Image (cartoon, rainbow, N blue to C red):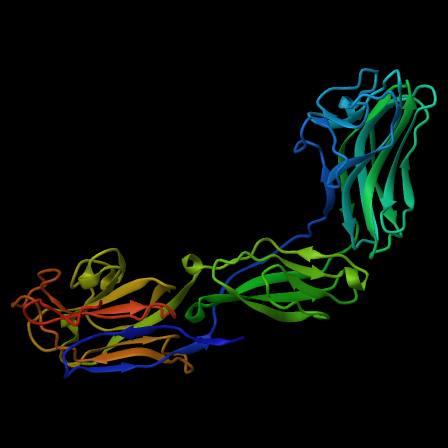
Length: 444
């Protein structure tokens, strides 16, 4: 996992002030983790998204092959409608509702039309179900098949020979499919001055054990990027997996179990990750959309105030505005100015990526800072691996008003620092005040 500089702070103070800056190198943070269930539906068609009327013959998710002959009207084929056929063909009792696919008789047309629904590949076993009805008459036929587009062969589903209303097929498991072949569901009706058929709610789901994995974003605010850690715990029915994505970075073949990282992706990129087991005799796991941006990126830093001869005269807060203005993110003692003044150790402050904050230091007396220092670290100071991000000593900015009471902001303000989680586009500036309240070195 790559490491990143976390936070830089820059302040502009009087020339005799001492300022030390140090990059804090830490492991890139994990923002969120989730486990995604299998997207098991390969075909799901209830026709509610289709336009009422004659179904197109142009290839697509729902289309038909029209082999009618004779004096046929334009609608003597499969159509999308909300009603039943003119015959007694009815499947509303088994679940047909709203839009459904229907073919109805015509007295002068030799009907021969095949409805083609969806397509899928990469499966060895699927479950198929649908609602249907058929009004048999004369020489009419109605058959449904799971059609292998690659080989041109069919797996029979239904082929009724009598009138049947309100029927539901399945779910029925069909195994022995060839994972490299493509399949679709077909409904074929033939008839000459006969009745008709209808179908609705066609559903094909995979019937295999998918891989199991979790997906975790890894933030890199410095470069305005994120990566994705993929932890694969088992293969399901597969013997290995490939990791593919639609975010434009390289795929990983034969990934194996354990954690694999893909990326980086630019902030705001929507990524779908597929754990592909089909090449190895299994099925897939597909993530939800994964993304990362400034709004969801944050990190804790740790503030310690120590040293000096008059610690109880020192009080600090962190705000979103210069000179203690704006929203208070953190304040010493959790109350008004002066409350809880003194030392603190490893106070946790959450910093959001790309957001600017201000650390404001207040001194009760209009005198020097007496040697007190602030120190930000990436971990608690009790952790021997912690690193100092920022340390400052003796700012001597000078209070804006004279006196010896906590008379509020900005009167007791000694200095204010501009803090920003560093990114490549925005170099930070800073502010300080002299004893008369004039800003020194204002940022552009």
